[in-house]
Image 1 (cartoon, rainbow, N blue to C red):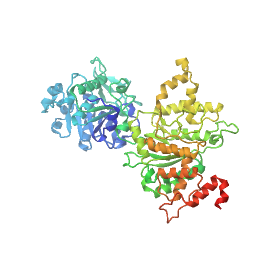
Image 2: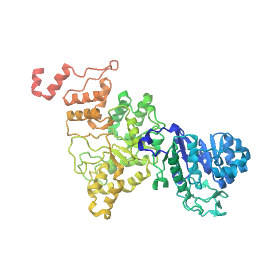
Image 3: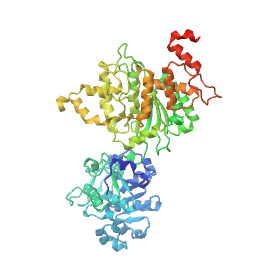
Image 4: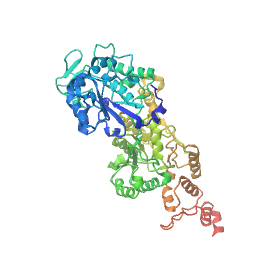
Amino acid sequence: MTLPSDRMHRDLRPANSLVVMGNGPSLRGFDFGRLSDVDTLGMNAAYRHWDRIDWRPTHYACLDDALIDTHRSEILRLIAEKRIRSFFLSGRMLELEPGLAGHPNVRFLDEFVPYWFRERGQAHGLTFIDSEAFRTEQANFITTGAYSVRYGAWLGYAQIVLLGIDLTYQTLSEADPVDNLRLIMTETPASNPNYFFDDYQRQGDAFQVPNPEVHARELHIAAFEAVRDDFLREQVPVTLINANRDSRLNAEAILPYGDLEGLLNEAGVGTILVPLTTGEQDQALDNLWLWAQPAFFPSLVPPPSRRPDLFFICNNAAAAACETRVQAFLASEPGLRQCFDEVQFLNLNLTGDADVYRRENQGPRTSQGFRAGPNNIFFAAMDAVRGHWGHALYMETDCVPIRPDWLGQINRHLRGAEPAWVTGSIYRGSDPLGQREKRHINGNAIYATSDPTFQHFIDTVWQPRLAELVLKHPEMPFDCLIEALYEGADGGRGDDDSDWQLIRTTSHNFRYSALIPNLTGDSASLHTLANQLQELLQSSPHSCIVHARRLAALIAPLRDSGAKPSAIELLTLMREAADGLPPRAAASRHNRKGQPSWTVDRVRQGLARRIPTLRRFMD
């Protein structure tokens, strides 16, 4: 077995992958539709859930003799349906249904394990199969989960991903022993902590003791360790990856971990969040126009298996009234519309102190600070996509793509990067900053909103601590809270300082990145900003979106000019504005092939504006 590097995680393609699905509680609420493009193996009594959602795995396994006795008729029903490609069953099924011995879609444990071949398989006419995937020096450690992995390797899959294999079994009061190896459910539990749905086990179900005392070690842990060790010794050509953070396979470092989104080649960004106020409506429409242009198109590759939602988070009803215009524009640009799944608007109905935004940080104090509006929109946005798949790209209306395929670029980064809660930019502009702002990650960033641990951090740290701080520092924006925690933490006190303890355990989740450089500001000249943007284009190929208010303001002039849209044309407009040239005359609807940027008349006007003493010589 080859233990994979992160690069191998990224490069292996799901077309030759098998997802082996256990039934642990980590799968509660899992969207099985995510597995529609990859082969899967399900097991045991999970068919009860599959029936409810009308879903079937590619392969099915049940190697527990007691479960075979309980679920025999249902397994026969699954075979008769012909919706599952193959079955891997205990030889106990042969004892109950001898006619299955010659079934082309059914394989038996007794064909691969020498002991069971001698005890049962041979008597039923099976032929022994000597496969490297089943060779083991630890023959007593047989479980459905571990041997499903061996079966997948025998089938020829190059990558096997484990999902829902938690290995955290708890004793149930509703289960009574039949003997040393069997239990029976005396009633259906109201809540079952061992499985991803509560009636996985029902009254009358028999099953084997999960970790019988006959084994000196925990059976399920030992079985997966044996798979790892046997595959390495036999050099079985398969990559094993555990995609369940909650599994003991991860906690006890038994198998390497890989993120499921990357392994399934799903889009990393599940939502693009656009905060919106009434005054930003026209800018939002200009941005969509820019996204529709080939030089700024979100994705140049075929859309991923799951497309992100486009979600506008509006401070009030007046801002949300923009929905009609946005939907109409997207209907007129079907190519751009196809980049997104749903397009949604959320009206927060913010009023009074909750909707304040004083950019200059001046005026009477309010109960929620000078940045209450943006802060409340941010936290509402994070909450709105709680539980939605993928990451959220938080993108204010002054964020401008500078390359095509910006969404694809971010997805490629997320598929290959170590997971982080927040991925964004330090300030890279030229404006002077305060002590607290100089290292902060700008709020226009990528957020791991589908990660429950990040949402818990928002609920218990980010939002309540910001609410405390704005009472003393009303200018505090949401994206400076982490830096404020650094500022207040006392590392010299060690574990006695709770903020320092928090910083030590969470800092690795906040990641600087070149993807969305923060160049916003008002002090630096337009020439300086244009030079910085030119430098990004030339030397920072991973930078694909820029946060720069004055760049966003040039989208409308670019649209009106009729020039062919490009990043270089935006820079040209910026340099013209820096040189004092007046805005270009709008091209007519019938003459939009482009206009010359520089004309004698425009140069004369620009010089007259910049050097008034020359005006009398030009009149």
